[in-house]
Image (cartoon, rainbow, N blue to C red):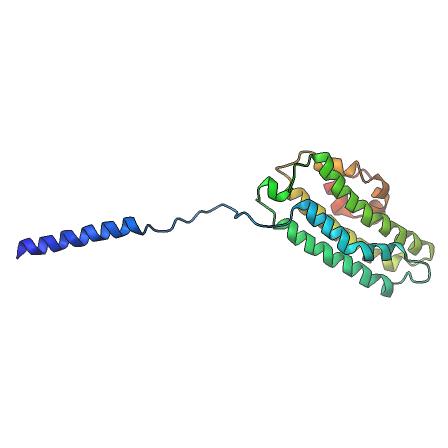
Length: 202
């Protein structure tokens, strides 16, 4: 009887060992970011530029007759909404491989040109609007709207620089060197986030 009991115990142990080999416990990997099917930075920027083109043109076309809070608020709101969508898309790229983030073999100067083009596109139009507002004496009521827009755009640039921190060296400096046409607008609106992150000289 003792023999059969011992045999049963050994069989149970053997079965347990075989079962553990056949179905190993799942291994959890920590600290890794799954590769995503996200849009690359150049694609995100191109999409944003296309999405805001109508509103950017509208803000550039503001005249003395319609330079009012009521007219400008919805235009600014539309641009900010699209920029916020872009920020979310950029942040989603954090920790992704370079080919996912950039999408192509683009050097720092070429990528800086893409970012700078977006900034010039927005702030040249904002500057045109601001000039009209100053000329008709309503800048005090319009400035907060334009400043708010500038800060959101600045947040996008910060997100881009953060994602690219391990890819490009001197990206901020390269961008600054390409936005001379709109630096005065950024300074006039005192967009501190852009002034700081791009080291704009006041």
